[in-house]
Amino acid sequence: MTTQRLVHITLLVDDYDKAIEFYTGKLNFRLLEDVQLTEHKRWVLIQPHGSAECCLLLAKADNAAQRSRIGNQTGGRVFLFLHTDNFSQDFENLQSKGVSIVREPKVESYGTVAVFADLYGNLIDLIGPG
Image 1 (tube, one colour):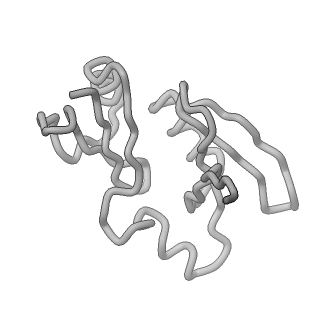
Image 2: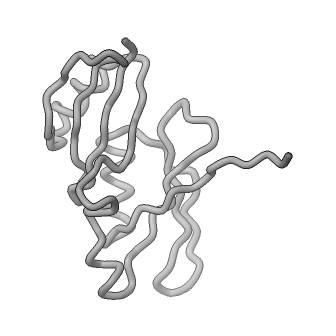
């Protein structure tokens, strides 16, 4: 039996620098790599602090079909599930930095959850311990 793991999840963006600024400046993600590949293409990896392996690959949309998916990666469903060990601190950070809160915090059987949107409208669950 082989071992497999997810390491990158592609996130379509319209501008590398705007996306980097949002994810690092407002969500406190780390910029792991930013390498110019061609005149219009970069290899940009970002990751939440404390995450060991999986990260987001920011991919600039380069045609109409890709541009139509920006902000709607999952057809309106939640795109990412961001677990935190300090829900109140991270939620306050989102509010203080003007991140769009879609659903206020709610206690569920699995923990406390709030839904926010990234700069494009992709939905993200912030989930704290139960």
